[in-house]
Length: 159
Image (tube, rainbow, N blue to C red; front, side):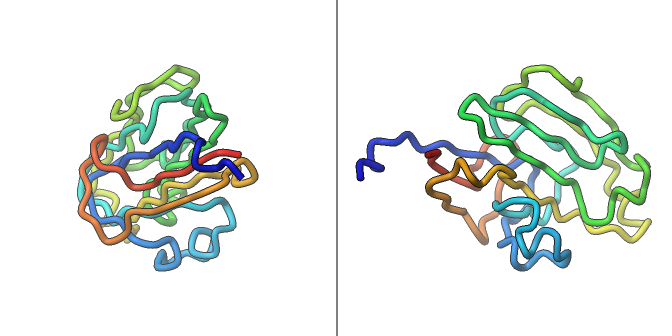
C-alpha cells in the first residue's frame, strides 16, 4: 500500500553499448528469463565493470561471468557474451578479486573483443537480478546507448 515510500535502487551499465530487451537475446536461457530478469547490453567496450556497489561473490573460473550481492540483498549476474563459457577463459582477463567489496564502475574483467569475436561468440552481455523473489518493482532503460559505470540500465524496488 505504501510502496511509493520504498527506496528505488539502480544498476548502471557494466559495459559500453546499447541496451536491448532480454526477449531479443538469441539465447533461450536469457530471453525466457530462466536465470533472472534484467536487460542485455549489445556491448562495444572492452572493460566490464561493477553495475552497483556490492560484494563480488563469484567470478566464474572461465572469467566470462561474475555475481555480485548488494546490501539490499539483490543478487546480480553479469554474463559477458553468449556461449563464451566454451572459450574456457580465452579472451578474458580477471582484474578484480573474488570476495572483495567493489564500487559501482570498478573494473572486474577486461576482454579481448577481437579474439572473442574471431571465435564466433556474440558479446551481448546480460545483466540480471537472479533472486527475483525479493523484487517488488522493475524498470528498464531499453534502446539507449550507455557508458560503463555511468548510465542507468535498471531501476528496481525490493519487497
